Image 1 (tube, rainbow, N blue to C red):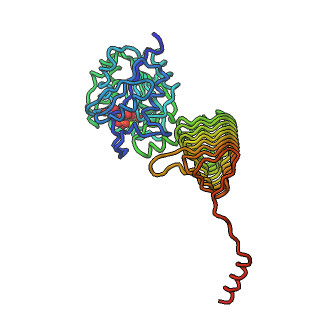
Image 2: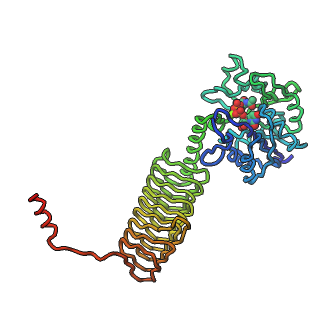
Image 3: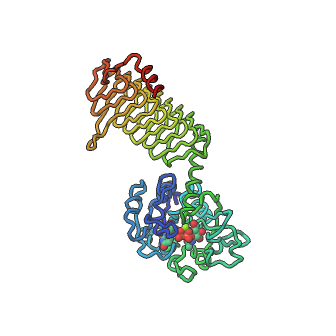
Amino acid sequence: MTMSNTAAIILAAGMGTRMESALPKVMHPVAGRPMVLHVLETAAALSPEKTIVVAGPDMDELATLVATHDLTPDVALQTERLGTGHAVMAARDALGDFDGTVMVLYGDTPLIEAETLVALRDARTEAGADVAVLGFRPLDPGAYGRLITDEAGELIEIVEARDATEDQLLVDLCNSGVMAIDGAKLGGLLDGLTNDNAKGEYYLTDIIALARANGGRCMVVEGDEEEFLGVNSRAELADAEDLMQNRLRRVALAGGATLIDPATVYFFWDTTLGRDVTVGPNVVFGPGVTVADNVQIKAFSHLEGASVAAGAIIGPFARLRPGATIGEDAQIGNFVEIKNATIAAGAKANHLSYIGDATVGAKANIGAGTITCNYDGYTKSLTEIGAGAFIGSNTALVAPVKVGDGAVTGAGSVITKDVEADALAVTRSEQKAAAGWATKQRDRKARD
Ligand code: UD1
Ligand code: MG
């Protein structure tokens, strides 16, 4: 049998009443990615032959969402939410006569790591156990199911907290929800489930006692509490976010980035940082940011959908919005917003600007307060600024408009027509001066 003889079932049909949300629980994001996609991504490490997501009724959005993942899972419908065991029953048709290892994962447990899943699968096959369960010892066992073992450490049963005796509640070894099950036995075990318990549900966890009663063996593989947080409320969602952010911070540090105050830097699940990148305090990464080597991102910057080439300096207080492409050694300074714009190598926009729907040539200098007027209330238009151009402070560039290579615009100009290369464009009213006016004014005021 090859190790890839695996099917993954992800339970995602619960609405998550305690979330107090119109959105299915497993669609709530952690580090910007819906929890169920984190779980699918991790499951991909098992190279499953079949992947099945169990969804509830009225969860079309969930089906659409999971279809975007590379594993292209089957979606099985659990028409009534009658418990985790019932949810696995709903996957039976999609599973067919699969007899390898069936991995059951919960869509609300987004922090599980790939190596842990692989270790669980392999432990079950090596031991020839019917079921292997991932257990953990949380600081507060709370509402988790308790794993009851014998002296030899074999798993005898799982007892839900609601159904547990006082003695059983003292057990600190808890059920993460993740199981590896012998596919050849699964059908028979599911047939034996009943709903005779505190919640009146078909608990998947009951398959342990059933397997034992049939003479089978069950085992526990212990893992780290951090990986098994199950999200049932907004407070637990915040805890999961915190753990995920810490993980992403450690990944960034391990990859050769300096985070001056890691706890204040927020990553998106897909943020990519190069080596020798320095990130100052209070920087937030939104979706789709790629940062090359030797970039400095200074305090209080916000980046999303942006790519930053080597050696660039961003911030402090810079905002890069989707489509911002920052070239090598370019500088984007304080209170500068860049959207859908390419800033070529060595160009600078250091103070108080909005550059949207634009191209800025190499080594161009964008003066303080420059605005690309890209929107007339109906359409967005392009501003093209040539290489080496010098845009004077407080220039308004009314798009569509082009400023040629090496051209200069005078401070305060409103540029509505194209400017030829190497020309000067100024659109200011002439300055007038009245000699001695100020002295006279002061004298008048002193007499009043
Ligand atoms: C479950 C386990 C508990 C374990 C805990 C770990 C059972 C009976 N209990 O409890 O032992 O310690 O997870 O986090 O399995 N779901 C469905 N259909 C249903 C019910 C649930 O698809 O009818 C899905 C949910 O969407 C969720 C997962 O199954 O992703 C777990 O359900 P949940 O209600 O959160 O179970 P817990 O009470 O947390
Ligand atoms: Mg749960």
